[in-house]
Length: 303
Image (cartoon, rainbow, N blue to C red; front, side, top):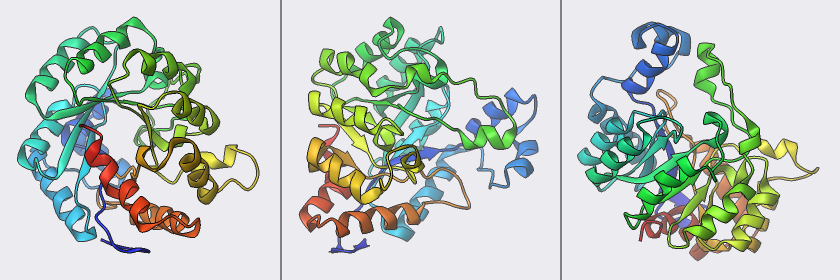
């Protein structure tokens, strides 16, 4: 893909796979159907077969020159959609699933998904499901991940706003008491051979995310989204400053480029790529380091 440094390979560490089942499960919460909520969203409703949506994503990534992407099943219980997508295009996608450790069948779902061989990461959203990442129920799922080497734990911290729920008028009873990256410190130390990913630079807990990275070499940061959390920080904080500080603390091998893309017809969010590569170029990042952040680090994450 063409970048400020010339042609470099690019992979995306953060793409939400908004499948038909994802929308159907949200529609159930409104006592409605996927077809009925389509006009409310103004988005393109995918086909019921997740492999068709996977094909659409491959075409979209090809159009932008993106090599591979992490696909995230974005509601607990939708992991089979991502598994089907990865089975269809194993050389283009890594599969992640959202988990809710408080659900009675959480461990069984994770065991089945990991046994498929297509799920490479478990996504924890403690504030969304109102638990601490140090909770023993989360620990049971982390133990399952740890038993399958190369499985990643993705832990959302900081501010959390789910646009699709807002557009549908669904309540979001999130609890930010469980959103501090510091809560992950003891957990990351307990599983030194597992890689942990904190998205959006900690989403408002940037300082705490940097502290966590400094103390735990197995914690990575993903750069995804517009990073609008910067408005909560000190004056004059911009992407250049964020990248400079993250590189100073975590180093170039623990940053993962991502966009937070999710639905069609918007597709892959090129504006995020443009803003982030511009910031990296302006602070003097070399092509070698850019290649790590934009591509190689994701490939090495599962080793």
